Length: 390
Ligand SMILES: Cc1cc2nc3c(=O)[nH]c(=O)nc-3n(C[C@H](O)[C@H](O)[C@H](O)COP(=O)(O)OP(=O)(O)OC[C@H]3O[C@@H](n4cnc5c(N)ncnc54)[C@H](O)[C@@H]3O)c2cc1C
Image (cartoon, rainbow, N blue to C red; front, side, top):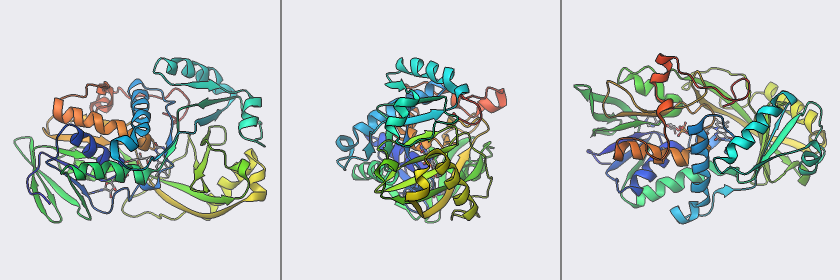
């Protein structure tokens, strides 16, 4: 591992790997990425990895659109196998959400997003056996889908590594030193690295890292459970992932199985990221299965739970991320607070952070509304649907 670098990135999830990749695209490879476990070991590797573009805030919509393009180019960019199942994505909502959904579809066309409103008849053709009770709106977004989160992260990191970046697994950052308000070095379990720039991309552990330079991040950590199901019923495994805002569920194919979990709006269970139960609860299994069976009764006959797990979100008060520099600590950058949405945005976000580092500002997307200062200013962001749906 280098002892001097132009940039140190803390965290080897999709964000850290994407930042390393995009820095290498700009010729910056005197870089160390520190991952204390293995790449994608935490939230990224456990992600539902739905790739949708249906968002509320302009910069997030633009990130989602840009990420889809990067996912489409993944093989060409990395020389690795495709990671993106561009199947389309279905969103189901209540009657109260209908007007907003129609407005969003129209607005999103301006960003180049192809989506169509679905009637109940259309929906029943796409998801055979679906119970229409309580469904008052639905859409399909044609160029969205889902991706393999671990292969995405490894692929991006591998390109950076092949160009000279140090991708270091099994080594933790343990401190950040500053002098006169500027970052000077990062200490690690294997010695110090002199650097003028450090990026905090440590997800649920980012508040602890920010405290090393006296920055208080308004991030709480939530425990998020998912189930793995098996079924021989092909109609229960639509090609496209489904986000069901009526019953707060989602499900998608996962290498011959189904992955299912809570959708938005969701309730939160706040935990300590260093001390939480990473298995799923028996009560969660019963309750989620009841919601899935209510919506598609055939789940009762032909799907069985074969596994499950719990992982973590890093959640901000407005469920939007915190990006970029912080006044008073030159050389420190945030790439944190992804609030359960970060996987799909990761490929684009790395490009924005690389622009901040190399050009002094993000030029391809205006991220000025996503800074840490918005909380002090009371300029919190909102989603266009109720609850914590960004
Ligand atoms: C169950 C679940 C379902 C999800 N579903 C979706 C979805 O459908 N679509 C979507 O877009 N997003 C989804 N997400 C959210 C998405 O996965 C995350 O927002 C995204 O992966 C966050 O990436 P990250 O790189 O910021 O963080 P992480 O993946 O958490 O990576 C942070 C890394 O930092 C490392 N680290 C911590 N401290 C240190 C240290 N001191 N030194 C070195 N390394 C350190 C950790 O080991 C970790 O690997 C889901 C998340 C979960 C948990």
